[in-house]
Image (tube, rainbow, N blue to C red; front, side, top):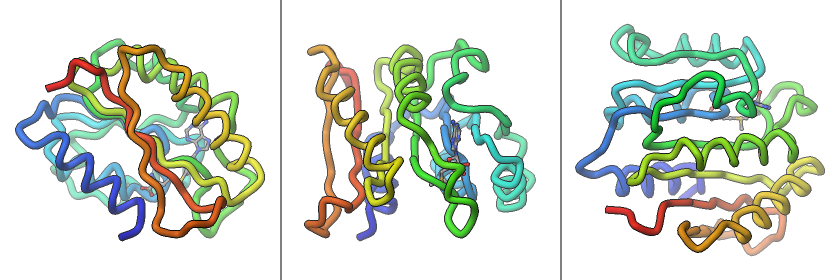
Length: 184
Ligand SMILES: C[S@@+](CC[C@H](N)C(=O)[O-])C[C@H]1O[C@@H](n2cnc3c(N)ncnc32)[C@H](O)[C@@H]1O
């Protein structure tokens, strides 16, 4: 199973029985994760991207009922905290660049780390932070290393689960799931 699908499966399992109040898609891209979160039943999804193209594609993917529950934000996820002060149940980071477009518009170590710090401040007690990393391109390799270090240095009130791709290659994607230790 591809790691993106595996991430969806693990998120689905985590949220059996709720809560499904607010989710953030920190990198909305083509909108697959946003659509997944809406289908899972979140009352509201705030979706960020730095590219208008990504927001437009996400908008086009959704039906009217889903569009009514989504807030599309043309801004970097490093600014998440200035867009919501509410507790967030699920935060998804699917890092990297939009497939088949300009690979130079990719998530970057510094802004990703700023966003992750904001994410754990916003995460609800029963919430889940999911981070899918792609070390197979130069900026992604640097970013993945930094994200792994960041997760390893979280204090003992956090649980970090790492899921690896089936591929044994060091360039294969990896998934980090972060929760409060006192979760449901
Ligand atoms: C791998 S794609 C995301 C795929 C998407 N979640 C989906 O389901 O189709 C990564 C996205 O991150 C966006 N991105 C890059 N830097 C960003 C930033 N600082 N804040 C938010 N999005 C960013 C890119 O424009 C790109 O669309």
